[in-house]
Image 1 (cartoon, one colour):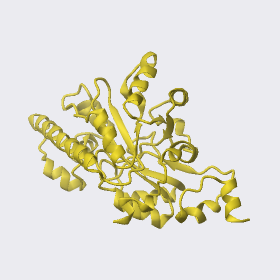
Image 2 (cartoon, one colour):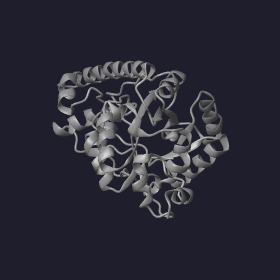
Image 3 (tube, one colour):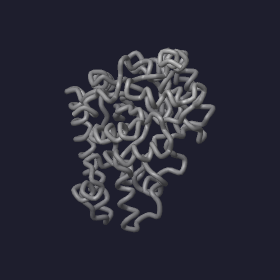
Image 4 (tube, helix red, strand yellow):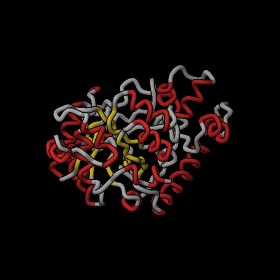
Length: 323
């Protein structure tokens, strides 16, 4: 069979480097992917390199690293994906200003770090640092001695978040499991909770787009918007330049995920799916390559949903893989 004939029957071919990988894949097979995960560059357990290897071991054909408010892990991840023959989507997850609940914005398929994205990352990093200092002050008042420098050294990241505080509390014997830290101390309405500042949505969208990426609403149920207002809310967000919706996420029930996908299609948005995986045992309902209802994330979310919106994207030609 000639290559052109293979391409005709299998239009999922996406870059020269991966022709051999995709040709070996049967035309009607479904491979597993994941478009939302976190490494130790933010609040995940595994290093970007180790996480890429773990994704390969799980049989993922496409994998995205979307650390919170940082791109520090993308170079190591991209190089590891080249070694493992995995298609890589360099990403980020940004915290957005929102009145109720939480609004996280995924930036998928970043090609470079633009000045606009660097400014947003610097702003969110400084905001995160100030928040952490407030949390530490509350902990000290309750007799828990800890410093931000200690946590940054222990977890080898400047992107310290509440999961790191939870891990520290486990290590000193204050709690038995990580979720207890949120239930008793760190969750909203609890004694050590501090609000997390977010970026303006339009600024964040521009930061992602100037970096060559596409903006996607992460786990939309965390917006805490009732279904009666969901359509108008998502439509308003779309009008500000957001292109996709992560309809499939472990925090959503299968019926809710299906409903969100239908809504996205109605509004002319593409749909993504992810596990939001942070590490083994961090959340019992989170497994790399699996999403709502513990369903495997099939490759349609890349090849039929996200990738057609990426133009000539080839991660091997991005800043992360070439510098």
